[in-house]
Image 1: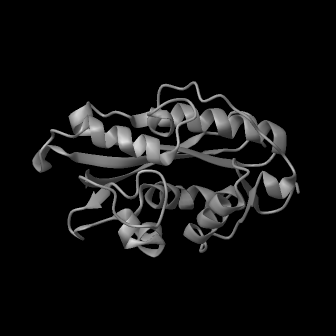
Image 2: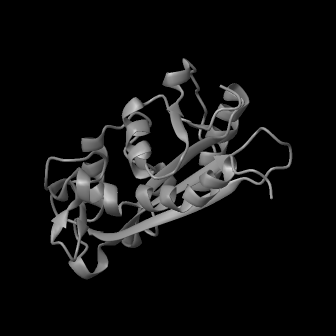
Length: 207
Protein backbone atom coordinates (compact mmCIF):
# COMPACT_ATOMS: atom_id res chain seq x y z
CA UNK A 1 0.00 0.00 0.00
CA UNK A 2 2.97 2.29 0.49
CA UNK A 3 3.07 5.12 -2.03
CA UNK A 4 -0.69 5.15 -2.50
CA UNK A 5 -2.93 8.02 -1.47
CA UNK A 6 -4.33 5.95 1.39
CA UNK A 7 -5.36 6.91 4.89
CA UNK A 8 -6.32 4.25 7.41
CA UNK A 9 -9.23 4.75 9.79
CA UNK A 10 -8.46 3.07 13.12
CA UNK A 11 -11.61 0.98 13.22
CA UNK A 12 -12.60 -2.48 12.10
CA UNK A 13 -16.16 -1.28 11.56
CA UNK A 14 -16.77 -1.04 7.82
CA UNK A 15 -19.97 0.91 8.45
CA UNK A 16 -18.09 3.62 10.31
CA UNK A 17 -15.47 3.70 7.57
CA UNK A 18 -18.24 4.20 5.00
CA UNK A 19 -19.63 7.09 7.08
CA UNK A 20 -16.25 8.83 7.20
CA UNK A 21 -15.69 8.25 3.46
CA UNK A 22 -18.98 9.99 2.83
CA UNK A 23 -18.04 12.91 5.07
CA UNK A 24 -14.69 13.29 3.28
CA UNK A 25 -15.87 12.45 -0.24
CA UNK A 26 -14.28 15.59 -1.68
CA UNK A 27 -10.82 14.82 -0.29
CA UNK A 28 -8.58 12.99 -2.82
CA UNK A 29 -7.48 10.13 -0.56
CA UNK A 30 -8.59 6.52 -0.20
CA UNK A 31 -9.93 5.79 3.29
CA UNK A 32 -9.43 2.21 4.43
CA UNK A 33 -10.60 0.52 7.59
CA UNK A 34 -8.45 -1.94 9.53
CA UNK A 35 -10.80 -4.66 8.27
CA UNK A 36 -9.97 -3.67 4.69
CA UNK A 37 -6.32 -4.42 5.52
CA UNK A 38 -7.06 -7.61 7.48
CA UNK A 39 -5.66 -5.97 10.61
CA UNK A 40 -7.09 -6.18 14.10
CA UNK A 41 -6.41 -3.74 16.91
CA UNK A 42 -7.39 -3.73 20.56
CA UNK A 43 -6.41 -0.63 22.49
CA UNK A 44 -7.35 0.06 26.09
CA UNK A 45 -8.70 3.60 26.20
CA UNK A 46 -6.92 4.82 29.30
CA UNK A 47 -6.68 8.48 28.30
CA UNK A 48 -8.18 11.29 30.37
CA UNK A 49 -9.47 13.16 27.31
CA UNK A 50 -11.02 12.40 23.92
CA UNK A 51 -7.77 13.46 22.26
CA UNK A 52 -5.65 11.14 24.40
CA UNK A 53 -7.89 8.15 23.63
CA UNK A 54 -8.00 8.94 19.91
CA UNK A 55 -4.22 9.27 19.79
CA UNK A 56 -3.75 5.94 21.58
CA UNK A 57 -5.78 4.24 18.82
CA UNK A 58 -4.17 6.18 15.98
CA UNK A 59 -0.59 5.57 17.09
CA UNK A 60 -1.20 1.85 17.59
CA UNK A 61 -2.85 1.54 14.17
CA UNK A 62 -0.09 3.56 12.50
CA UNK A 63 2.52 1.21 13.94
CA UNK A 64 0.64 -1.71 12.37
CA UNK A 65 -0.23 -0.17 9.02
CA UNK A 66 2.79 2.03 8.39
CA UNK A 67 0.54 4.61 6.76
CA UNK A 68 -1.23 7.80 7.87
CA UNK A 69 -4.04 6.98 10.30
CA UNK A 70 -7.15 8.76 11.50
CA UNK A 71 -8.95 7.90 14.73
CA UNK A 72 -11.58 9.49 16.90
CA UNK A 73 -13.13 9.41 20.33
CA UNK A 74 -16.45 10.92 21.29
CA UNK A 75 -19.02 11.29 24.03
CA UNK A 76 -21.91 13.28 25.39
CA UNK A 77 -21.46 15.96 28.05
CA UNK A 78 -24.39 17.08 30.21
CA UNK A 79 -24.13 20.41 32.05
CA UNK A 80 -26.31 19.28 34.97
CA UNK A 81 -23.92 16.35 35.50
CA UNK A 82 -20.82 18.56 35.43
CA UNK A 83 -19.91 17.29 31.95
CA UNK A 84 -20.53 13.60 32.61
CA UNK A 85 -20.57 11.02 31.19
CA UNK A 86 -17.98 12.50 28.77
CA UNK A 87 -15.22 10.07 27.83
CA UNK A 88 -17.09 7.38 29.78
CA UNK A 89 -20.24 7.71 27.64
CA UNK A 90 -20.07 4.20 26.18
CA UNK A 91 -19.58 2.73 29.67
CA UNK A 92 -21.84 5.09 31.62
CA UNK A 93 -23.98 2.29 33.06
CA UNK A 94 -21.10 -0.20 33.36
CA UNK A 95 -18.18 -1.75 31.46
CA UNK A 96 -20.42 -3.72 29.08
CA UNK A 97 -23.40 -1.38 29.10
CA UNK A 98 -25.88 -1.40 26.23
CA UNK A 99 -27.34 1.73 24.65
CA UNK A 100 -30.71 1.23 26.43
CA UNK A 101 -28.93 0.85 29.78
CA UNK A 102 -26.91 4.03 29.26
CA UNK A 103 -29.98 5.98 28.15
CA UNK A 104 -32.00 4.69 31.10
CA UNK A 105 -29.33 5.77 33.57
CA UNK A 106 -29.08 9.22 31.99
CA UNK A 107 -32.85 9.69 32.25
CA UNK A 108 -32.78 8.62 35.91
CA UNK A 109 -29.94 11.00 36.71
CA UNK A 110 -31.86 13.87 35.10
CA UNK A 111 -35.33 12.93 36.37
CA UNK A 112 -35.77 16.09 38.48
CA UNK A 113 -33.87 18.47 36.18
CA UNK A 114 -36.11 21.02 34.39
CA UNK A 115 -35.75 21.88 30.71
CA UNK A 116 -33.65 25.05 31.12
CA UNK A 117 -30.95 23.00 32.85
CA UNK A 118 -30.85 19.96 30.53
CA UNK A 119 -28.28 21.45 28.15
CA UNK A 120 -25.77 19.03 26.67
CA UNK A 121 -23.38 18.58 23.79
CA UNK A 122 -21.98 15.77 21.72
CA UNK A 123 -18.20 16.07 21.38
CA UNK A 124 -15.87 14.29 18.95
CA UNK A 125 -12.12 14.62 18.65
CA UNK A 126 -10.58 13.31 15.44
CA UNK A 127 -6.82 12.92 15.05
CA UNK A 128 -4.39 12.30 12.21
CA UNK A 129 -1.07 10.53 12.79
CA UNK A 130 1.50 10.06 10.03
CA UNK A 131 4.26 7.54 10.86
CA UNK A 132 6.12 7.93 7.56
CA UNK A 133 8.44 10.61 8.90
CA UNK A 134 9.68 10.99 12.45
CA UNK A 135 8.75 14.25 14.09
CA UNK A 136 5.72 14.82 11.89
CA UNK A 137 3.01 16.78 13.68
CA UNK A 138 -0.02 14.97 15.08
CA UNK A 139 -3.21 16.81 14.10
CA UNK A 140 -6.10 17.10 16.54
CA UNK A 141 -9.51 18.53 15.60
CA UNK A 142 -12.61 18.70 17.79
CA UNK A 143 -16.25 19.16 16.82
CA UNK A 144 -19.13 19.97 19.17
CA UNK A 145 -22.89 19.64 18.61
CA UNK A 146 -25.04 21.49 21.17
CA UNK A 147 -28.48 20.34 22.24
CA UNK A 148 -30.53 19.30 25.25
CA UNK A 149 -31.63 16.02 26.81
CA UNK A 150 -35.23 14.98 26.15
CA UNK A 151 -37.44 13.53 28.89
CA UNK A 152 -38.02 10.27 27.02
CA UNK A 153 -36.66 8.21 24.13
CA UNK A 154 -37.80 9.51 20.76
CA UNK A 155 -37.11 8.20 17.25
CA UNK A 156 -35.78 5.03 15.66
CA UNK A 157 -32.69 6.22 13.77
CA UNK A 158 -29.08 6.31 14.95
CA UNK A 159 -27.57 4.73 18.05
CA UNK A 160 -26.16 5.56 21.45
CA UNK A 161 -27.75 8.65 22.94
CA UNK A 162 -29.39 9.79 19.68
CA UNK A 163 -32.96 9.09 20.93
CA UNK A 164 -32.40 11.46 23.87
CA UNK A 165 -30.36 14.22 22.20
CA UNK A 166 -32.79 16.97 21.28
CA UNK A 167 -31.92 19.67 18.74
CA UNK A 168 -33.88 22.67 20.07
CA UNK A 169 -34.23 24.53 16.77
CA UNK A 170 -35.67 21.39 15.18
CA UNK A 171 -37.80 20.29 18.12
CA UNK A 172 -36.76 16.70 17.47
CA UNK A 173 -34.11 14.28 18.64
CA UNK A 174 -31.26 13.10 16.44
CA UNK A 175 -32.98 9.71 16.23
CA UNK A 176 -36.06 11.45 14.80
CA UNK A 177 -34.11 13.65 12.39
CA UNK A 178 -32.39 10.71 10.70
CA UNK A 179 -28.98 9.86 9.28
CA UNK A 180 -28.89 12.47 6.51
CA UNK A 181 -29.33 15.31 8.99
CA UNK A 182 -26.80 13.71 11.33
CA UNK A 183 -24.23 13.38 8.54
CA UNK A 184 -24.51 17.09 7.84
CA UNK A 185 -24.48 18.46 11.39
CA UNK A 186 -23.00 15.99 13.85
CA UNK A 187 -20.01 16.43 16.12
CA UNK A 188 -18.23 13.69 14.16
CA UNK A 189 -18.92 15.45 10.88
CA UNK A 190 -17.52 18.70 12.23
CA UNK A 191 -14.38 17.07 13.61
CA UNK A 192 -13.51 15.06 10.51
CA UNK A 193 -14.27 17.93 8.13
CA UNK A 194 -11.84 20.03 10.16
CA UNK A 195 -9.22 17.36 9.35
CA UNK A 196 -9.87 17.65 5.60
CA UNK A 197 -7.19 20.29 4.81
CA UNK A 198 -4.57 18.21 6.60
CA UNK A 199 -5.58 15.10 4.68
CA UNK A 200 -5.31 17.01 1.42
CA UNK A 201 -1.79 18.09 2.39
CA UNK A 202 -0.61 14.55 3.16
CA UNK A 203 0.33 13.68 -0.41
CA UNK A 204 0.88 17.20 -1.72
CA UNK A 205 4.38 17.63 -3.18
CA UNK A 206 6.65 19.76 -1.04
CA UNK A 207 6.99 23.27 -2.43
